[in-house]
Amino acid sequence: MPFVSAARYGKDNVRVYKVHRDEKTGIHTVTEMVVCCLLEGDIETSYTVADNSVVVATDSIKNTIYIKAKEHPVNPPELYASYLGQHLLDTYAHIHVANINISVKRWTRMVVDGKEHPHSFYRDGEETRTVEARVTREGIELKSGIAGLLVLKSTGSAFHGFVRDEFTTLPETWDRILSTEVDSTWSWNTLPSVAAVEEKVSQFDKAWEDARKITMKTFAEEDSPSVQATMYKMASQILDAAPETAKVTYALPNKHYFEIDLSWHKGIKNTGKDAEVYAPQTNPNGLIKVEVSRS
Ligand SMILES: O=c1[nH]c(=O)c2[nH]c(=O)[nH]c2[nH]1
Image (cartoon, rainbow, N blue to C red):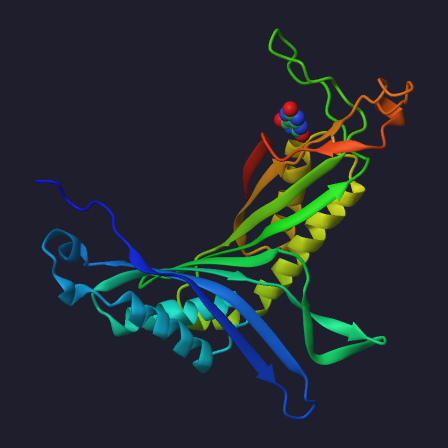
């Protein structure tokens, strides 16, 4: 007999917006996020014998996401994910794991005539702040991250000394454009309960701010010998900055910009040190990943 060796289900792409209105100052603070919540547990029979008695409808899961966003703070997202997951475990005895993924959009406050506007915001890039939570009765595993942060530097990057053989056409370079879309995560040591997440709550915003700063400062200031070496430096610094994390990952696509030889037109020089006009490439692209753990 075939058997269900793994199963999870729930609601994906639940878009949630929450506003906090400060009564005294009139200042509004807004959060927009996309939530995915998938449950695991004693649910095999729903697949094997059409037993819907074990199914919490995905529609109810969506409703729970909204209700918990109303009842609790949605910031930091690590805390909201913990409240949501714990509620699902407390409510449904046959559910053993709540997997919650959150992706927070950027709404940055507008500055108008030099003053921060109380209730107007702009979409400050497609970068998101991410959380992956795995909530079980044994504890809460949290992985925080940054996704979609597009960066470019126009010099200060080299790539040479790599394997040269009969398959190699790439010239060595001591000065190239480096561009990538940062996808990074940092995994927290497992916390025993929501109370423990509450107790440590300030570490989440700090780590996210530090990780963004480290990523951008290292990218900008380092003379990069390769994507591999640069991402290892970034990951090591995040481990130092966030002592309660166990490992850090980066996934960096190498967004290539090719030189264009324009010498066919009146002998124009546009290669090497004379290169100014480049052709940005979409694909294929390098993709370089690393996971760095605390020793
Ligand atoms: O930083 C880089 N790492 C590579 O592994 C690689 N491979 C390549 O073609 N260009 C680059 N750049």
